Length: 308
Image (cartoon, rainbow, N blue to C red):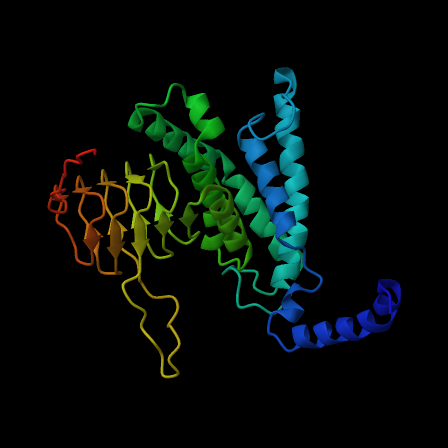
């Protein structure tokens, strides 16, 4: 039997089997008919082009037509996102937002979500500007703010987080996580959209940073690569499953620096303001303000090699 014959004979059976497997899984009726993550990636690209014209685009933007360019990007992405949200909230998910129009149909709710998101863009843009400034003043290797915007993974990850966070805050499922995991994919920085992060936030280098869902971070905080702000343990229900929606991740107050490889765990752990956490420190308890926490300096053994 050659490939053509095999395809004609076997593909129908394989297709039927895959369809049945998918139907037995909970996600089947919630994903069929909804746009996939590639559509979310495209919308993010349009949104960030509107926030930073020319930075994420293949060709230069005519300065005299910036107003038209931003308007086009916002209109295009708003209509595409409205359709995706309408599909998501039409799949019998739990309540999306609390409002006085709880009986509104899916399209009306999707319209409201998109309008609220785009209304927040001036505020988001101003906040991201503080992140750019934090990188510029916090990294001696940074030559210009433009260099940071064009090349630093921190700004990639944080700008996507700030968009996703707006959608997370109104209870929209799935889409914020797709956005944040896209940022994780392209930068190595994993910020859950539920985390609360203040102004002037900078992640230097960035690879391997993890910021959990219930983490709260104040203003003027700087993290280095490999930092984990995670959960110490999970409270389990009677069936042994993790209980969702409880505080699991630490709080980092204003003006804190956490150096490479440090791990801070636990929902009751608070790093007080103006503190410095050294590299590779492991913390599961709170630290008062103005603290310096570091490991004992290792004593390397130096051996002289005699060449024969």
